[in-house]
Image 1: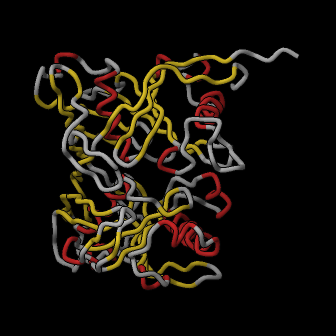
Image 2: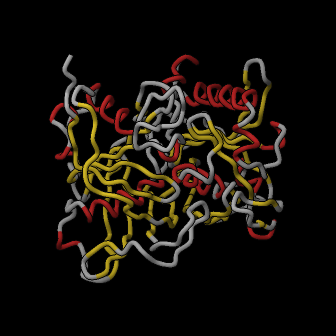
Image 3: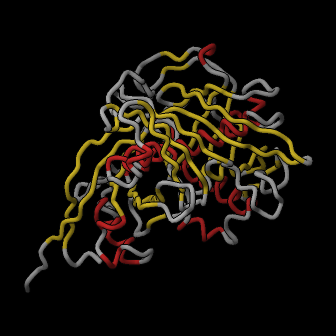
Length: 395
């Protein structure tokens, strides 16, 4: 029996923040994959190497973690006053699906840089030397992100001395502004889907926990570390090697998803792993980061650990950082309480790889909290460019 030849598709492999992904221009995808649907999902799974029962991604571009199992499509923007449309797919490692329900904040950094590299931004908007302001339409969540991308000699400046905990080498700083990041289009008219800053979340078979459930950056369920038996200083191996702990976290996540109205039945959570996120917070205390560096209590306002796609994240998802910054700015949330309470426009939090600062501007309008933007710095770097190959019968 003759087997089909491989086909090759123009692609760029980019690190954005503490994530990596395979980036495509929409026009470069095979015609069947230029529309949402099964063909596109099959292509992206094969590119990444999923589903993989060995959870290793040996036969694909993925890195067998939620941070490295990602594909991105960019195209000239269909939305007025924007430069590019940015669509993000989170590929499951061991199951055959692509989750399109949220954004990747880390790869938003790379989306701004890649938009310039790929010729998708009007040259008139790119200075010869200085900062290009790239207006990104985040198509998954219908939100605007502004990326401030450094440019030297008309090209994206990728090298620099900006250090980001969780990334080994320094690079050039890219400032991201997440505009109106809260999901205030829901029925409550609030970024808090339950209408409360703190809820008692009943998790069947496990218990009832105080929880702050917020939709800003990405839907996130925050609980107190001490309420679930943790200190907030945990590293990946403390959680990810404990199958029972991961089951408990998933149960809390599912209960939160139901209360937030993101799913109607617990079964739906199996194909919505990307959202909501589950995170736990604690007041500052000293710990040793995964790199061996000591993080002192005085270095941070609070500690946060978050799970992505069922595993503790090695650093912090960018979208979850937006949720942290937003919740911290609103007096009374669990995040704000862990940071010491009061009004604040920025926090520096400790995560498994080190620390991260994120700012948010929140205010009350007609008794409802709203956030105008969240700001943080990341970096991005092209690792490889050319073509990615997949077998001809992939889709």
